[in-house]
Image (cartoon, rainbow, N blue to C red; front, top):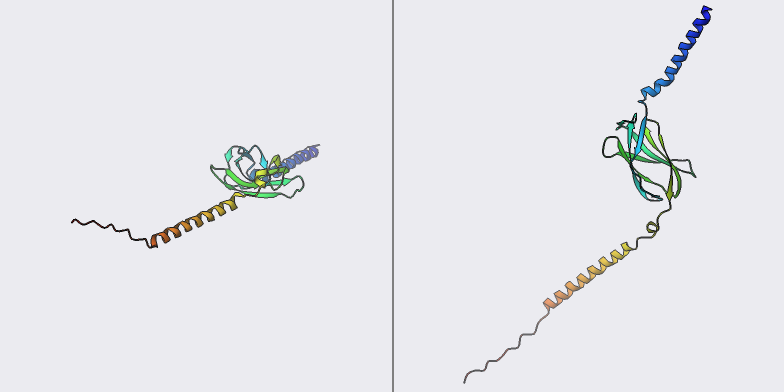
Length: 181
């Protein structure tokens, strides 16, 4: 009976050691982190670039300043992620990524919090580009034409002023004085 009891104790000890070994890598990895997003725009439009800011907090508390972080987006059509690297900006642990959604539709997105596990951010609905952003900018050529026309008008004015200044003028008519008799 004693050997059965000792085998059970040995088995229990080995099971505890096995669990300890499984949990050890996560303890040495520094635990976990939480990402908190800055306020987002009310609507996101395809083709526009947005500065997405966020804070990474280790264990949900301490701002983490050494992350190799990025925002990754995936459309519902393609599971190949597009990655937008983030850079530290502002207070400790705050990062900003310049993100562009290329097309309208549903997009899955998450934050790569390396060395921590990624954090899923859910699904976004991205709208089609606005009509104003689709229209070509006709003011730019018009401004160029206006600048050229202004330069030509100034050149003609200066030329005419120079011609006028150099042209001979008739001598003023002399008045003869009537002499006294």
